[in-house]
Length: 71
Image (cartoon, rainbow, N blue to C red; front, side, top):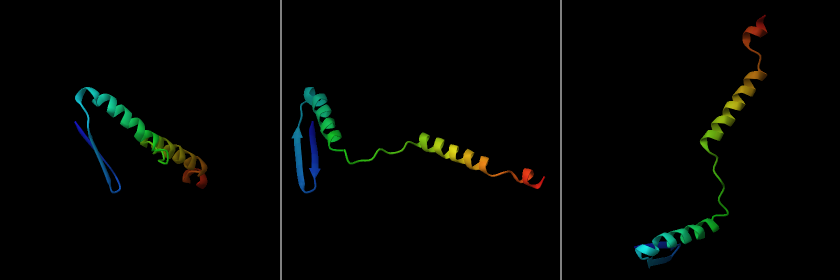
């Protein structure tokens, strides 16, 4: 199985046999993960929705309702 990678202008390619493919892929993933230290973790949608709902509840508690204000 041929594998290719580029780094700017450099191109690297290699051929990996079927029985070594799993080991190669695991090693390659380890190398990629080791060099991704500058990336920021993205915020999951569930967390954003929960935070947005909490903000909404807090802001609604701060404002008195129109019915209470007129009485």
